[in-house]
View 1 (cartoon, rainbow, N blue to C red):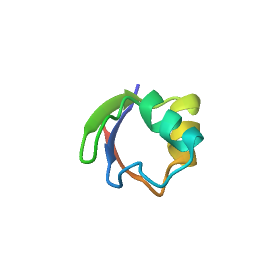
View 2 (tube, rainbow, N blue to C red; view 1 turned 90 degrees about the vertical axis):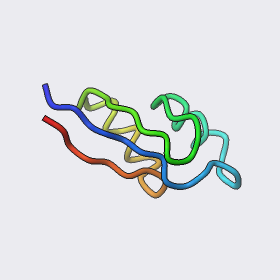
View 3 (cartoon, helix red, strand yellow; view 1 turned 30 degrees about the horizontal axis):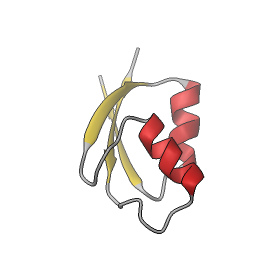
View 4 (spheres, rainbow, N blue to C red; view 1 turned 90 degrees about the horizontal axis):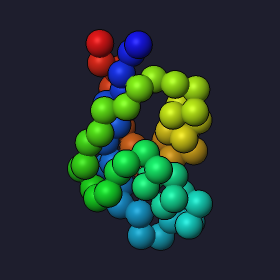
Length: 60
């Protein structure tokens, strides 16, 4: 299965609690923190909710 490399490029101050919870659910803790996640529909949905705050790259 494909993997996604997700990096938090914008901090969470000034965002809604729901967006902060989504970022935390993705495993991101601070700016410029990167995690590698499985490419599943639920992860894609979470990324879509905070797409203005994260950078996504596909990995093999």
